Image 1 (cartoon, rainbow, N blue to C red):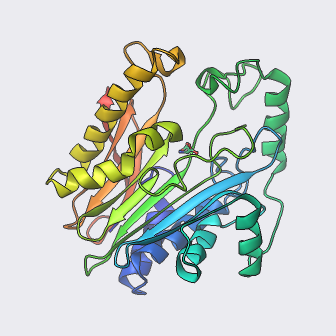
Image 2 (spheres, rainbow, N blue to C red; image 1 turned 90 degrees about the vertical axis):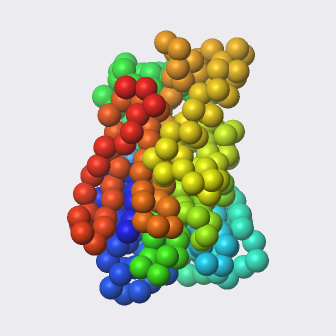
Amino acid sequence: MAIASGNGVETVRIAHELVTQEKLRPVSAAVRGVAVVEADPNDMSVGYGGLPDEDGKVSLDSACMDGPTHNAGSVGAIQDIMHPAQVAERVMDATDHVNLVGDGARRFAIEQGFRPENLLTERAEEIWKRWIAGRNDDDRLWPLNDTNPADPVLQGEPRPWGTIHCSVLAPNGDLGCCTTTSGLAFKIPGRIGDSPLIGCGLYCDNEVGSAGATGRGEAAILSGGSWLIVEKMREGMHPREACLAALRRVVEQTERAARWQPALWKDGRPSFGLTFYAVRKDGEFGSATMSGNRRFAVATAEGGARLESCAALYS
Ligand code: ASP
């Protein structure tokens, strides 16, 4: 089976097909599955068409992890490469390193045969220009409160986030996963989020299960969210419960942090969005989000590719 964030219905369909029919290893099925979203200019949170950093540069984060070999690869803040997840897979397979960042990651990608191209679409550039015109002095400190009423995308909303995570379970019980993103819109150049960090935006252990995150990367980093979920599943928790347990941990930590960063806390709960996804080795799966109605994508042999509702910590 394959599980992904809500923007990944096509991703899970592809990944499921690749892992069942073409017998691809799960990590490669996940990487191939997310490619469709990385190349989609209309998804402004991943790959081509993603919203840029402060300087107007699209800068991507991606990682993948292979259960059977317990190996991983990642690229952080890579520019000009449309499929960073595939570069992360090359880091995993062709080097002894786990993380490559910035220009080194870009150079490695080109050396591996990836073609550099402009990833900034006209629409993303237009939104970035409007953000520049309306940016406020607190912007780097309080990104959660960064709203720009003049902008149709940002209007009334916190600064947009988005990412795709995909975890895959093969028929033989092997696991693999991948997370890929353009990260926080208008971030400080060089910022990496949770997506390229093993244990934060993704983690898998072939004996237990696989997990990943989308949403406020800083919270997934500070909680070690994906690692924590896999450990909770190791203790016997259902994937959905494990996701909720990780969110509860984030809430406790955020309450402490909110003493010096009050923007993190609103109405007695974290003011940001965070969603976790998990699959256990026995095929049980689940997802939970901090609050509100969110959906995740899943593909199974019986049910095909579809959207299901995430459990919510706060309704
Ligand atoms: N987690 C991503 C990041 O912090 C963004 C997102 O999922 O919306 O870069």
